[in-house]
Length: 254
Length: 245
Ligand SMILES: Nc1ncnc2c1ncn2[C@@H]1O[C@H](COP(=O)(O)OP(=O)(O)O)[C@@H](O)[C@H]1O
Ligand SMILES: [Mg+2]
Image (tube, rainbow over all chains, first blue to last red; front, side):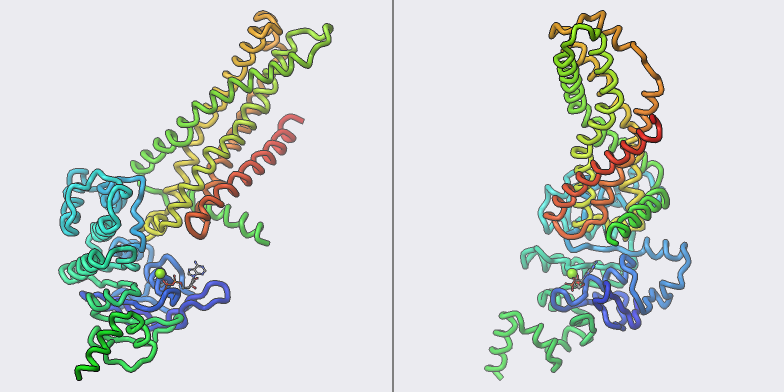
């Protein structure tokens, strides 16, 4: 579980996050949704410590990060997996080396042991036989899967995903979404997914946080999102033509 | 104001580069890879330029010393001095600012824009130590390139001078040995080490702190070349003033 309280972030005089409080639950896919530029990525980067917020507290399992000593911080890092928007695979390394990288850096396992772990996680993301390829040699969807494999190779307790299906076709996007959800449930991970894609909300929106201009304007579940009268949320949901049409059909039928 | 900030961030970068060390065996591997990418891969171009520019220096000197009173040995003497003092260390380093420098900026810059640097940091790797430190260490072998440029430059001069019929082999070799001051080599290699440090760190700074996308990577490489050469030339002036005057 991750809790944030009154999180504020600004660049220069520009306020990006204006005091956000929420809780991300363990064993659930927690979504942060909102339009481009609403501050989703900045919020994620604050959570994982890539950016230092100007105010507010972030607590992992009730332990505020600013009260952690160096050892606790290091242990926390090892328990964090992150899936970046573009995959962020190291292009100078093969798929196998990419996934092995966190193990090589922070454990003293023997190479055969690491390789068998690599194959294990590759198997979990349904990829085989790509060990010796380079990231540029595989498709975008495969890169995302390798990225997930790298993020979970250390069995993290927390998984962060920034727009996991941007740049993917709808079918592959759904596969990636479901993969993230499955891993979340099976490993009882606290997963946070940033997205602006309504399809992801439909697929994996167990808990939803709606962000607008740096303010958390709505919180709820998948079921709630179609019932809410919050104008910002309905604007977002029905900005997609498909959902608009479905709503119209439903209205006609009832 | 902006410049002061940049200088400050450069020195902060250096501090982080030399702390928070990456695991030893990983680091060793990276250093060997950088020696290959930065130094070994430049061997061809440095040899080529060294040889031919050495030849041209000799040609120019010979063609311009037409007065029969001036001894022919002077051609070799002038070639040796210009190659050891300036051409090999400074001129080659400016070319390396274009080759090695823009390679460093674009490779680190593209890691920045594709969030590979963020990925390193999230994993708890000190990205500056991981990316920049191996380059600094690899460029400790840079004087090897300069030594080759010196040797081939003088050799190119000898070929051009002797086979061009401007000076006999005997005269040329006598000229090379004339008034040789060993401290000049010390001076040249001190310079070379300073340039090597600039070559590793200034382009790295331009890549590491860049913002934007693929287009900006290109712009950053150009800017990095300009600043690296400017700093090499300034450092050259200061070191010469300190060591030779
Ligand atoms: N490092 C930064 N420096 C300055 N401004 C930034 C930085 N990162 C993000 N921003 C600004 O913060 C705002 C929110 O960005 P972001 O969180 O990336 O949006 P999104 O919700 O699309 O992920 C944008 O206006 C962006 O320009
Ligand atoms: Mg974003």
